[in-house]
Image (cartoon, rainbow, N blue to C red; front, side, top):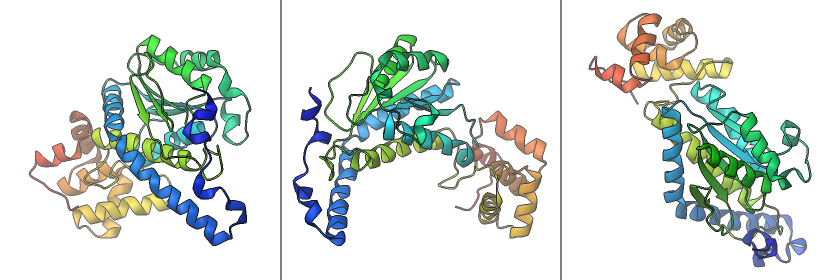
Length: 303
């Protein structure tokens, strides 16, 4: 399909005369168009589920999730990956972002970087991706050759592959799951940093967060695998311990410090009145599942 036929390249009838609108009117048009994104994402939930299940399988085999994209798509992948370690106390290797043009492309446009499939294949090899890993290509237009090269190589290696795209897209034998989120033309024709970018952020939020929940990184909706690394997180961690155990704030903070800033460990220590070493061992035996540790002792925390 020619790029001119892509939904993201079409003119948006609602914004055709946007240069004649005042500020309030422009904002109204943008908001109205943005409302269409969630409906488009909802239609793609079955495919998002399929890919997320593959991610969970990869994690359980000791593998990783890799996002591969160019431009805005690549930046959003790197952003999501960078937020996983502090949020869920996960290894930086568990979720990784790859952007065409390298780290320089995060802050500066590297024009043409997306056009070389061989470079995409090369980075898959350089990253040491294996059959245990999961690779999500992100190209809202569906035209980034770098991304396609990466997916083709990843599939050749045996990794699970997926593609997030904001246009209609024909099946490829090297893509296991195609996630199509078609939210219509952009208000500025072809500017996929807008609706397509928002759709991308929503979908990768869903994938990574759901996978983290499924590998025992939360208790209810509480961020119990948080690692306290700054004043804000020490405070949040102490408040979580206080909320779950009914201990006073100062006592909760004291236990959190003994737990070396690990909220989940502090919760086990505080609720069972055991040592850091004992709490750590108990969690390790059940793959970090806080509920399993507590249920063995008939203990339930507040939610």
